[in-house]
Amino acid sequence: MIRIERGPEPTSLPPEREHRLSAARRALADGEAQVFEGHGVAKAALYEAQHGKCAYCEMVQQRTAQPVEHFRPKARVTQEPRYVTSTTGYWWLAWTWTNLYFSCTTCNSPARKGNHFALELGSTPLTPEQLPPSEERPLFIDPAAKDEDPIAHIVFVQAKRGHWIPRPRRGSKRGSYTIDKLGLDRTELVTLYRNHVERTVQPCLDDVRAALQRDVPREVHHAWSRCLRRLFHPKAPFHALSYDVLDGLVPTDVRIRWRLDLPRPWNLSRP
Image (cartoon, rainbow, N blue to C red; front, side, top):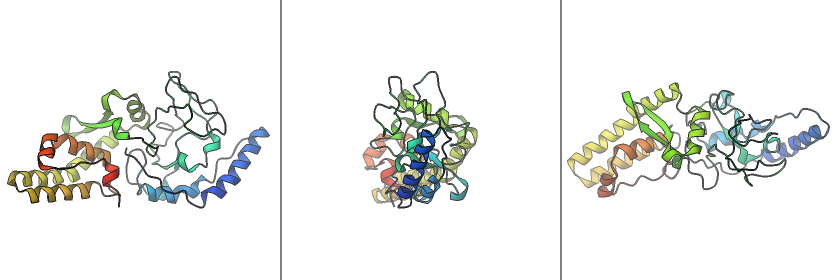
């Protein structure tokens, strides 16, 4: 997971929000079920802003098959006894641009994120119509939140048999909760992580190491630049993984000696 820049709200969303939110308020006042439709008008804009990748696992997706995800669940929140949770859901944010993401079906499934949205102890859930964050402190990492840095909470570490596994960085509770609920360490993803490292990251690293052995500064910098361009192209998957592999396998002292910068992925991946 890396930081995401949503960009401007699509012009189709405000009129849809006005219409749908008015209907939701009337239904609530009349004791009727609220209808949560219409947020799909934001899907194309979200898909483009996220370069076709799931906001959470960073897998490349087909737009038509995947849902628009509500960061704060719209209808209800799964109660979690160990944490603070809203008792109503966040229905008034169902058409709010800053609450929407493009997500894969698996990350957004009931078995994963679903309606989970726990808050840190001591938090106060939003009241209806109140805008976030107020006194809420979500345990889920919000990849587009101002000043949010997912890499500060999740790190990929090398395990046995060439596997790279996401773990909480420095014991981050938010990192742990996000990994657990989204299943960022699920078997199929771990396999894809390994394949990505072996087939895409490792060849780049081999070129860099070969240049380092030749001890020619120009070749070293060219090999490093090519590596960054390939791994952090806007539509390339698993930027966070690629970042941690480079950070882990190219020692800091080597990067300092050769002046090989490794900025955060969102600074590298801008088109």
